[in-house]
Length: 115
Image 1 (cartoon, rainbow, N blue to C red):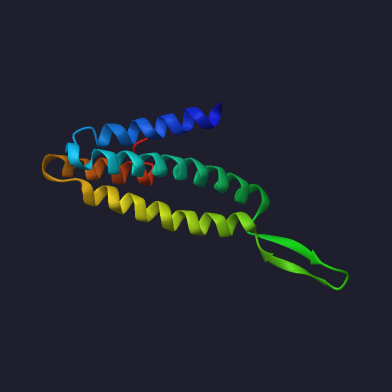
Image 2: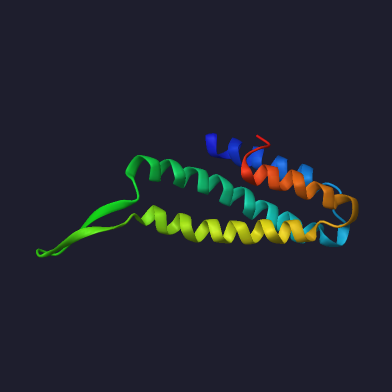
């Protein structure tokens, strides 16, 4: 239930920022907002896991192969943060005219200053 509330909160923040988007862009924006909210939630979850487990993990492949490698959550986080950044850039680029001032609000949301 916590995840649904977190995503709803994120969705609501983004929807508020884009409430005045022109109708022709609305469908595209809604998909991007949904994906951005999911990724923001997932990135938060991954951060918690990385804080608990650390950045590296031990591995054992067979009898003689073992060592330390980058934690799989770090790999996922690195990929997702790039994709999230790309979506946020697309959203900011879709803002036009008066709605462009909402870009600052979006950047505050991304950086956590608008919690």
